[in-house]
Image (cartoon, rainbow, N blue to C red; front, side, top):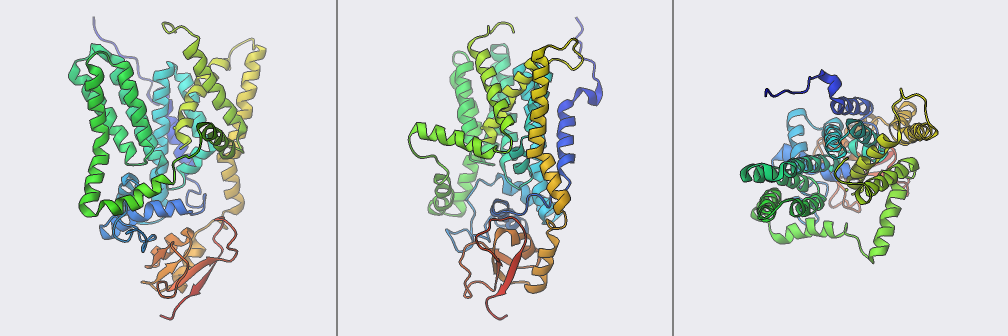
Length: 451
């Protein structure tokens, strides 16, 4: 029998690509103005700037502490390598820092859609899931903020898709193909791990799934193929770190930093703190949290009740919660053309409308509103011009993270580790009200010693 393939309908058959493209286009306006430059953007990308300009992976803003002026092991190098390549090709600036995470985030949506279509067996549910996650206010924030989370999440989702492909064929595929697919899955998870340490959680989870889904001797050989490939990127990073420096320097940066991010206390208090985290992070979008919880309950119901024959920080779990929420929305929302509408269907669409208004107000629309009313105030150009006029090239400047781009573009170097010291710093850039958090670009420039 001749093999047939589904007829392609072009772009209309690719909602994930349309969604990813729309996400990029809707977030490009004001990408250099919202959010304002903040400390994570600087500490995570300064090593990329050093690598692109000087060929050394180190941190100038942390110079004088724990060997940062010579080596950077504070975070895995995945994001720094990508951003350094962008700086090398496109130059240094806010746009060059923020555009890669935005593109990685768009890739996350396409991957989440593909994962939803495979797990939920419904293109409609997958579109709901990816669309909901695209509007998540915290996902929007991190996608515009020069951080490594979207890069890690994209590799993790792609690794999960590769695992599902290996597990779906199971015993039907030759051992070589099975192990190659698991190795690809492991390598993608390993790349997630050298983008953000949270990749380890994905590696542990998928490793357990290998043991739970493979049969016979393939449990161990499949796990070995997956684990070896997953460990390879981290092993190469560690080998390079130990070759170029010492374990004490590595431990003083990466391990000490990581220890500060581990939870402490009794299990009950950790769970309560995790719930409080979602409450605080999504305080402006409570309907989104309720929808995520409904989606989680829907998944549990189907896992525990329905017959089987028929039918991640917090942004990582939220991506999985979005899958459950997408399945739940697809189940409770009747097609718009359905006639007559039931009370339950009308209530479902009313909830969807309220949810959309809530996430838009807390996320994309709220950000657009702030840009519309504060476009001039959020411009970085006045701060850059003031520092270029006051600070001669070659100066060492103590100041906040917001001054990083301006100081670097003026041919000088910023230090975040203080206090300001005339013996080490030529200038200080200080906020007039030291009690205020990072919210604008209102600073005073002080000369600490004559040039």
